[in-house]
Image (cartoon, rainbow over all chains, first blue to last red; front, side):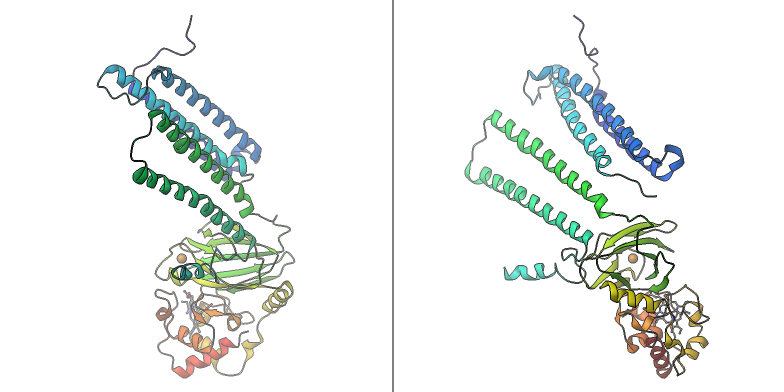
Length: 127
Length: 320
Ligand SMILES: [Cu+2]
């Protein structure tokens, strides 16, 4: 049977996937809103369009973070072992990293929602 | 309780965001009390918990209990509370900046920040335009639009009793909208450091009954009859080139390099909230503005005698 998840990569960098998505999402939201407000000609006047765009970016970012979380969950052995994973072995290093990545994904998930929240309440950009 | 009295009495008064006299400041005050009401129980709970752990329950929790405490108390609870507070504050934001469409705003006040005073222009849709300085009057119950900008530094316009603050930025026009709900005299203050006398850059904000405000504004749209008062004040004003910086309606002096003096005699304060108005205050400000406000951009007039200063001050006080 083919596994739905991509093969496991052993690298420290996967730890940062979710925070990087969070940072990019943050940038995308702020830069689009700033351009929308400063250059009406470029992105149009329709605030609803801006909100839709931010909603799209947000859903995409959340999806990416969920995938990162799933991969981390697998690396953590689907939660079979309990933390703290602090033996000086390769296995514990992998488990620890998987667990840390999973927690970071949770944090990034919440952070992305908080970043997008203003677009739910704000309804116009005064120029 | 007695020890707390000064703390609580500091919450009322002419410049308190916790003693609101406007719609916007009311919302700010509510947000503040809500944060306190939300924060206090959490603080008390955490302190109680740590006391419980350190004083009474002196052995560790079972591991799965500990994990549950961390999950609910350390993850779910803070995320929910923070999300709720964030959503509430964001939800307030549009109503804290309620802009009347530029057509239906009945009164628009344009304010330009200068080191260390305020240039003020009242505008009505019917073309009424009144220039003033260092004092702001509003009709109670009416939505007033402010257009804020600066000619030099970044300043910030804040009348805590009426609403939130808004920066005055050179080359940019910021908007603020306020609806005062209580007649009274309040105090505004520059809230962004702008130079030596930043802290002395204030102004009285007076909320008046609609009819009284109308009368006041109409009177201000005509030159004061005081410009023709007898005495040597006007000649001294001319000879000392005060008019190269100050505007007085109904005269040849139209410069806006310094505060408009057209009706300076009827202002509550002199020097942007520094001295209670009066001929003496005017005389001492004219003698040496820098002594009242360090770094004020008005030259000292040490060559004027006390009698001459009194003449000028009396004439200025007559500009009602
Ligand atoms: Cu200032």
